[in-house]
Image (cartoon, rainbow, N blue to C red; front, side, top):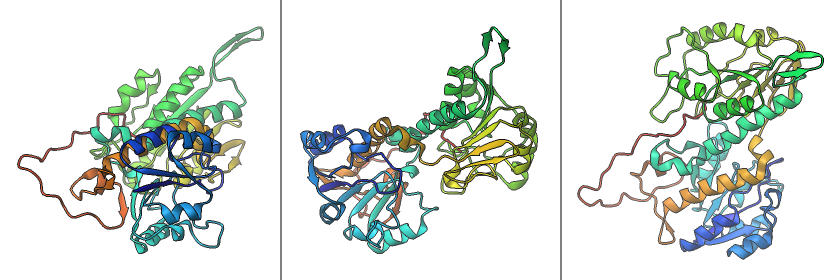
Length: 394
């Protein structure tokens, strides 16, 4: 089977789905790898480096899609490939696609994938179980986003992050509040602490308190009852509007005292929860800022506009998009390991083997047919172990 690696065409995207190291692993599994010319350049990988690893080079996307049995991508297929048609229309019928998809935000793309019977698997829907930790691309990319969010805040905030002893006296450290203590939130906490800020964090999941405090931050405990705050995979669950409103009111004072607020809350498959209202932004001091990592999924702040910086009453609300792409080298390395490990799980003797009873198949699947269930030997059933990694953003 031929695995195709196209160049990402969504504007601003610099990552590549597979790096040369991953090519070698797939070839060892009896797969042929075909890379579109220039696909890895923005991530630091030349066509020559892919050829050295054993991949073939295809001049353009049309040629690659006409030959590929399995397509590995970073972003969802573009609605317009530049030829007047969507990227999905270039795929052969009955092929397979593994990528970030976010089906709730891209229903039309999912519909077109179904129409062409493309077996599509969304990397962000990977189950949070022990045997899938090496395939957890969402956590990999979230760690980069959390790191970059703090650097954005430190660059734009008109204050020092650390406490400084100067000839003009002592300068107090910046106060940073992180809302959501999943992977992105924990990385944001760690980075802000390294830069010398005083850091507080809040999450509806009490279980993350120990992790927050282990990084040197203060965990904010609110007297609010939350039911089923965490699902079996470690994700935060969506709370009712009444509960969310109580949380917002109790957080208002903390937000008003903060120099920078970094919001990271996501609920898989749904619009990001509203954590900060206009009133909460107005309570902050002029010069303060908000970095909303959920901007692409609707935003945690009422004033967030994806890809833009909105200034309201002297407070900047920043809605960065595709932050992992700003660190394309490491982001591509990490994603390549995640997606190649997943593909190798789906492949047996050089062919796709989609077991409909495997939750690593059914969980990420968003379109396409499944293989018939295989006969199991007596005693072959085993329960998956619960996830033991860090809780993810929610």
